[in-house]
Amino acid sequence: MNDHGVVWFRKDLRLIDNPAWDTAVGACRRVTALFVVDPAVMDLAGPHRRTQLAAHLRALDEDLQALGGRLRLRSGDPATVVPQVMEEAGADALYANADAAPGSRRRDQRVFRALDSLAARTHGDQPVPFHTFWGTLVVPPRSVTTAKGDVSQVFTPFYKRWRDTPWDPWVDQRTDPDRSVAEVTRPPASAAWGTGTTTTLGDLPGSGDDPHHSGGSRAALGRLDAAVQRAARYSDERDRPDLASTSELSVDLHFGTLSPRRAAVALRDVPGGAAIVRQLAWRDWYAHLLWEHPRLTRHPMRPAYEALQWQNDNEEFEAWCAGTTGYPIVDAGMRQLAATGWMHNRVRMIVASFLVKDLLVDWRWGEAHFRRLLVDGDTTQNVGNWQWVAGTGPDAAPYFRIFNPTTQAKKFDPDGDFVRSWVPELVNLPRAWIHEPGAAPDRVLAEAGVELGTHYPRPIVDHGDARQRTLAVYQHTRERG
DNA sequence: AGCTGGTTGTG
DNA sequence: ACAACCAGC
Image 1: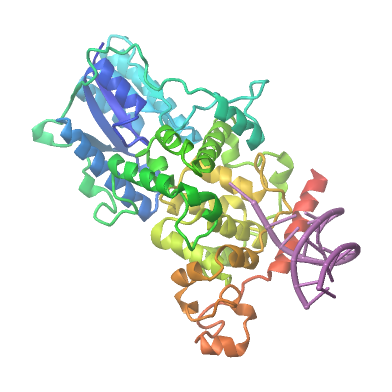
Image 2: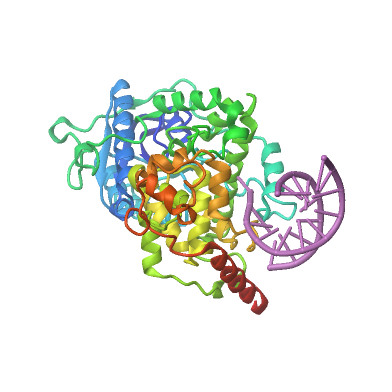
């Protein structure tokens, strides 16, 4: 039995279904809940993700207060701050849920080393253990492999094995059954949030704004319940950005206010739920892949694609970011992203395909933009999906699969309602022309009060030409590799 | 979880 | 005319 454990919360902002927390409160007499605001991470987070983080931390603090404690909030480099907090508290063990992203692994390695020197300094060389768990995935990296022991390079076989893989227990059954709830500490009253690199929830940027989702794991369970309620519509309507038929669980899964296992259990036996659970398998697969091949965050699977000749035109990239490409579905999605930090999955695919295959901009530019702005912006998922669109990743879309943004829009936003809600200058265009104002007759444009080039841009590229150019560039690269 | 340009089939 | 289908990218 440890005397005092620190639970370092990262992307697991919940007290239920949390193996690090559950283990710590079963194994320690006292636990301290810690969150570290890492400037290196926060600098790369857009306003909406910061606001969401603040809301979730506030809720976590309230849940801890209900147990008689408080959340300790500090800012700085975790490799410095975490051992500091442990020394102040006199803690002898650290608990956390791991994360498959390469940057997170490097950070945790630095913390491991810092704990070694802490042990040498203050514990008479008695090791200070850092217990890590995988409470952010259904199953941890390396647990689903081919017969050879590799991560499958193809999703479908991975999915079949994933489905048949029994879940290892999250919580070590050896923890003391007589002590299932430890005392949750409060910081000393004289320094409500500690000292030194202290910060407060009020100091968090965006802490006063309205979050995308209401904060906390209780609210997340409500959202899971709502997803269960509409799961039957999922397979028919999931591609329709004008309807609200997706699970909308990505934000809670990113912050860990929802356990992916609880989501899987709640969804797997309800009509339509299996298709959503399958998406959780994609999520685990990308975590598996990035764990096994960290270089995928920057590099293609197939070495020949390193030589892809991107156009990388700054003005076109900026038009894409701003939502002024002249393709209404693309502009609607990019404006929604900037305004809310969220975008429908189908629209993410359309705008990503447009950036990579119509503008020939390096997928890493788009990946960085998405990761910064998305409330659910997560390295493993974002990289996996951009590599998929670019055709450069494992089991990716074939290079010749190039979305026609107009065809996609007509198919998945048939009435144009999604476009109208984000591109107000086109609000009066009739259904027949809403997705291609550049091709609309002058009379139609005049009646809708749209002057192309003034109120709304002409298309910055011709899709047909762009398609031919991209096919040629990819083919050239493949032939030489 | 494609699109395009062609051919064949239908009325 | 306009589906339906197919190959090739």
